[in-house]
Amino acid sequence: EEGAENTTSLDELLGGGDEGAAPAPVDQTPTQTTQPPPVDSTVTDESTTTTSTTTTTTTTLPKEPVDYLAIGDSVMLGAAGVLKNRGYTVNAEVSRQMNQAVPLMEQLGEADVFGDPVIIHLGTNGPISRETLDALLAPLSRVPNVIMLNVHANRPWTAENNRILAERDKPDGLDNIILIDWNSLANECPGDCFASDGIHLNAAGQQYYADVIGDWTGR
Image (cartoon, one colour):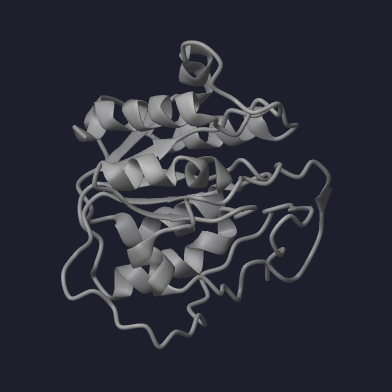
């Protein structure tokens, strides 16, 4: 199964991603694979999901829940420095697929270290499935506020991924999901906010991205 092994360490969770790293371009050609793709690999079709908890780590888990935890891919990684300065704990990786984050979410859920809120921005790098999204969110069922951003990218899977994310957000506050329409809000960023791919953020875009999230978190 895809994503059955995940090498994300909890050191990265607590310390966040490398905000100084330049985001790599999002890959464009989906391929099938049985292992999580390495950084800058081709995209994986997330037609199946995994609930594996085979991740191993010797890192000590936090003793208390981590509030303002943000989990994402290279779009979030580009803004990690700004988010950290505003008090978020960022775990973001280049080329991360949504299904690759499932084992990490399960591990953190089992350790009961999710605080409030949890911010998620995944789905840029390839198609997602409803089953994968359900598996990702299952460990977050007791978190009062789960803030998800949808996808802003000129990619074949963007529209369908955004439909799946929208379907998961029940109307009238009947669940703990808050969906931010990043796909639309990205177009309202004043000035020049994006790299040449129209996906990753430059300095102005990073501030705007953090502002959009902050409108919901108060940071």
